[in-house]
Length: 188
Ligand code: GLN
Image: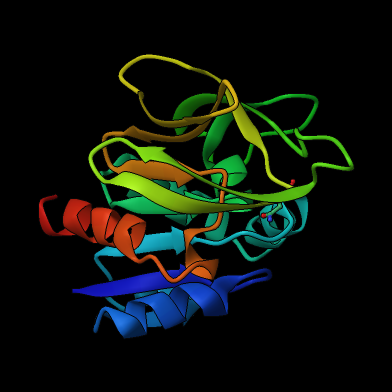
């Protein structure tokens, strides 16, 4: 198995460290030609979704990656990565728009911009969750399954080959959300 990690901006290196820990091969995707290399799943990291979205568009990768997601390639979006996948982003443009969720950016207000908690994740159990100027999922549609809720807000969801978390599993020591994603890749 080999995982591509979008590395245009943001917290991509941390995802690489988790995959190293799990002994999974990975490489960084920075430009069109990187998409020629074979990979079985893609991670979209946290960062700034508007910056990443524009870079994806300018580099011509937005369309190509969207096509692969629509064709069933497993994808895991954390924080800004979640925003990139959402079909509807409140008061903002959508980017890939492949996942039937509605998202609110920077949703926790200034004081609560960053916080840490431990909550249930469906199918895993209690896990640490680090939120950094995080979005939340205001609503899910179609066959999207809610996987975690914090303070009444949806913070993790899955629709077929797409997995998203509003929090950052790559900055905690717990590797179980990444393992959940790797299972999706194995069973695709
Ligand atoms: N606030 C960022 C955005 O709207 C997301 C923050 C993050 O990825 N840690 O894109």
